[in-house]
Image 1 (cartoon, rainbow, N blue to C red):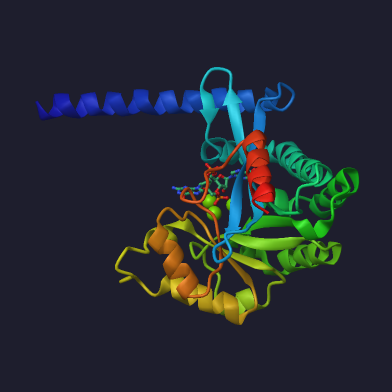
Image 2: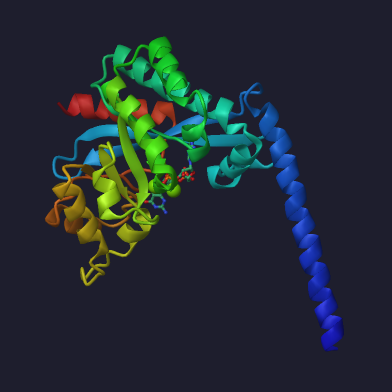
Length: 280
Ligand code: C2E
Ligand code: MG
Ligand code: MG
Ligand code: MG
């Protein structure tokens, strides 16, 4: 019986595995045509000043509407795009569209906001990355000070090259933030040598802030460290009111999360702008 059961499990595993491999291949093929078929859209998650409740920026988050699977999560297809190299043209499309959208908001007379764009480590390390960014800024004509690129701690595996690139971005006038901060391996000494502007505290740490505030000292440590290094600090994944209270008490004043707003379509962001403008 045990043998029988074992074999069944094995078969189940195999068919499950090949199903997954098959979906992966299918998605990867689909990715090749997704750009020309216009299957990508950007959603924008608002970022707020937690004290004044002012709307200060958005993070662009890509969505893929697959003809057969419906919406595919970026967590599923970005790794495929990285493996296949398609992240280079897709990443350029993301940056162009985010910058163009920010220009459209500016020209519509809305108050200027920051736009944050996620950059894959593969993109960051690619040969013409800085040139590509300069090209997009020139074409879309946005003021670089409103653009923030989100990179991850993984770029620190190659410190010397990364610092060169970061300095070039700084000279262009763009901001850089470290996304999902706290989940990687960066030490304080490494951090203070990086020409960056912002730490985004990973949402797992925000999720650890419970109602009684009886939490691990990690969040407070990250905030203190960021403040001491004169960096901006953004909390990600805020879902509860008391998390906002804790963050403000500990001197983190910028945040995003489902409690404040989910990522939204351009139309919905326009509504927020109007609401905020008419409120005065
Ligand atoms: P990320 O950059 O850390 O983005 C935050 C993710 O958390 C987003 O998921 C967002 O929708 C989600 N989120 C925001 N607030 C909350 C909250 O209160 N609770 C919870 N549980 N989740 C929240 P999304 O859009 O599925 O993106 C997942 C990841 O995929 C991103 O993590 C980023 O690493 C990657 N990604 C998304 N868009 C892009 C892109 O345009 N380019 C690149 N290279 N990567 C992207
Ligand atoms: Mg991000
Ligand atoms: Mg993040
Ligand atoms: Mg993430």
